[in-house]
Image 1 (cartoon, rainbow, N blue to C red):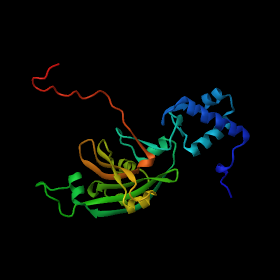
Image 2: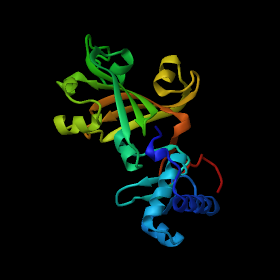
Image 3: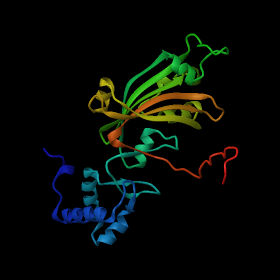
Amino acid sequence: MADPAEREPSPAVASVVVRLRRLVADGGYRPTERIGDERRLAERLGVPRSALRGALEVLEREGRVRRKIGREGGVFASDGKIERQVDTAESVPDILRRQGMTCGTAVLSARLATATPTEVRALRLDDDGGGVRTGAHVVRVVRTRSADGVPWSLETSVVPAHLAPGLLQHDLSTSLYRVLHEHYGLGPDVSEETIDVVQADDEQAGHLGIPAGAPVVRVVRVARTGTGVPLEYAVDLFRADRTRLHTRKVGYVALARTAGAGG
């Protein structure tokens, strides 16, 4: 039996779908650019809001528009990609919720483990002499995230065990940052991220629903508290075909003049 959401729209809704497609195309709207809110769009097209909502549902399924809720919500042009802000620390559930999408989470593993050399250095778990502290423990959590039922990211988060005792007893299918904040008073006040594009191996591709060797956006992050204590070391992989990175810059860094340079 066909999903009711997939049924052919009524003639009235179908007419609005055609007009909305033309409005988006003729307006030259860029992905993530705001088109308007439902009330103004209905007035602009001279149609009932019920017909407009039906048409928006069709265009959302096509990936042409996305509706966002909240004070800065409305109807936005879309190409089906999810926008990740580079200059803010935000959990995946919050990213998707803000963009009007439903987040699904599968916890692949969550366990207490001995820190790897990379994790020891990133989380400053070395001893005073700069060597590896024997038996330094971390909580390592591996999760997949989906957006509206389609895989989007594969995340590995590593937290020093001594900072969050009993972390494994909490629901880790939600926001890890929210759990750390609500139960341990810890938050990622400062984050440093390195971003590049790599090829997914067989295991990663299987979790993300893409062919092996397909490009993924890799984000390697160290999050610290306000006092500079490393809180999390993470490696996140995002499907490149579903991801857009956005950043906001203010000002610029002027190059220092070399000695004797003119002008």
